Length: 390
Image (cartoon, rainbow, N blue to C red; front, side, top):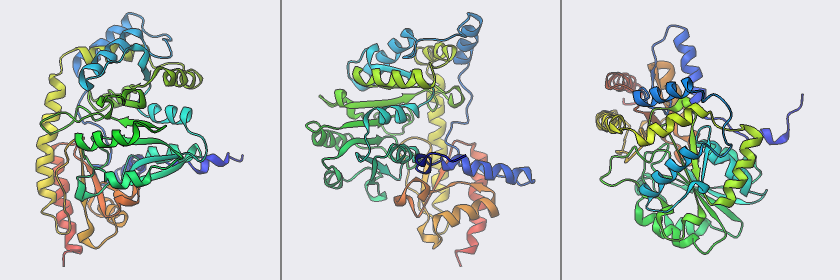
């Protein structure tokens, strides 16, 4: 069986590859501290689970509308309107199984071979994967430690060309935890308002932040709502990664295209999970607040400890639940070091270069784990550091 050529252009997500390797070590009797997977280690809040059980009992087990249940789309529209200070309606909302379809489907609807897409580097690997899969040209926007892992506006200005069709943003960001300042986004908006291009704003970590004010959305800039696709969902905020439910907010013309792709691939998102999602947004938010507070506590303790490891340097991330540690001081390539940490210390982290060439020299650690396990991970890393600290 010969696969289509385009399958050579699609990539995988490194976190799941490392998880397989870590599980293999565990099967052989090794103890591994898992800091590779990007998902909250908390239970889905009880009232959301109860809403799903009730929905099952009430018979929400059949097909629903491809675009999503009207009640959920109305709830999402109200939530996005309030949190982004914009005015959107149900006609702007697509409900999909997880957040990734709001990367893939809009790209599939918008991009032609040869179009150029600007995307963050280091960044979520699926951006580049989908761009290449569709025959478009990925153009990395370098994110650096010096800018707090935001972008250099002058560099973005240079990268925007006639063939630029899409710009991907992610704030708070995976893998760095960086948050793009409001002023940077306002200035970027002025660059794109008069151009024939669209912004895909990945805001899946929008509720997980440690700054005084919530992260700013470029869609909030006057004139940008019509040019922006907002990606958000329930996986990170409500610890619902396995529920597979996300949504996009976009112009109605693009909603129509996404609906066509949905009906040809998934038909619809599961109806009982959509009923639970209504409870997630409209119900008590205490669990979300507590989870973020715990992430902050872990962030502070873990980054402080990592900064004591010889050759490591780690800035405090502004959001998400990732520490992006600079390991250049060890003199070891980040991929080799990540492999060494896994094989010799039993600490699973991700090589920064798996997020793009600008991630070389960094390792991403997810601190969505207990303080006890985070302390143990740093203890093991410090013990191993004797190899390069001589």
